[in-house]
Image 1: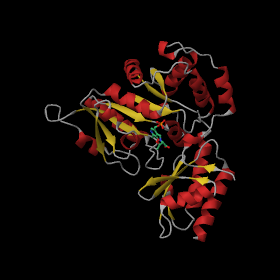
Image 2: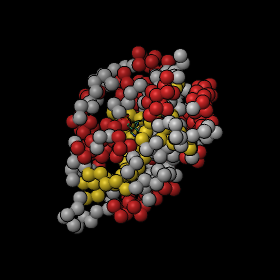
Image 3: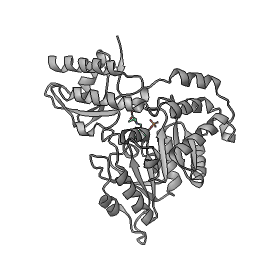
Length: 347
Ligand code: TLP
């Protein structure tokens, strides 16, 4: 049976070019700063997002963790969306391990934290009852909001405000290249509005492992110590970096195909019985939809679809998620829709 895996863009397998690059990678011990392939990837990544320096980390979670701890001291606070990945899916590592308080504010369905909500969340630095606000975190594209893209105007406004208050802005840009491709701009048009950015090589860019944290030189120096503290200092990490270089050089522009496939999928889903979907929110590679059915629970539907070789994710509150990626083509989307149609129409 053919398997169509739409659970996440993390399931992509490395391309042949990546596999060849891994085999040929020049290696050294990166904890000594001596892995030439890691050094090349970090320089390339920093230049790509317009920052002074960058650091390879094994995962997006570790990249965000290092960022929060590098920006905030213990007892300081980060303002963060209540629907953000950092708040929802990273086991509160920054608080548990780093003593950084997370101050959640309501996320708008378009992925924004309203400026007013941010202003209201700021602590009074002269009141010893309160933690000190240090950081604002944004997410672009926004995963739980369905892959929506933050506008450049919004990013500019938040950054200008943060500067006026002497706060930093960190971007969870796990899919920031999807955001850039969706907006039709160079990624630097987005990253210029943040002090630090984490992006993943291992999602739509299809590398097997790895994420990048980028920012100014002093920030990355500090983040390297934190990465080491949590065991993220890797040795011959050029094995990973080699695929990351291919990801940055060859996989960015093709993200547009994933977006086209997501749109195809969303439009097809919108015609099926028992499915509620907001097409305006399908802006990148993520398709989130709700079951509006007396017959199906989300979990039961994913189980029955899986029996037919179609894998999609259940993300709570009645919502399901499908994500397109490098290993999915237009035929897969048609087939996925056919499977969905046959299951939903028959029952
Ligand atoms: N997201 C995963 C799951 O954890 C939900 C997925 O399948 O989408 N930021 C954002 C916005 C993310 O979506 C993810 C992963 C991360 C950070 C963490 O990256 P990893 O999985 O590399 O730690």
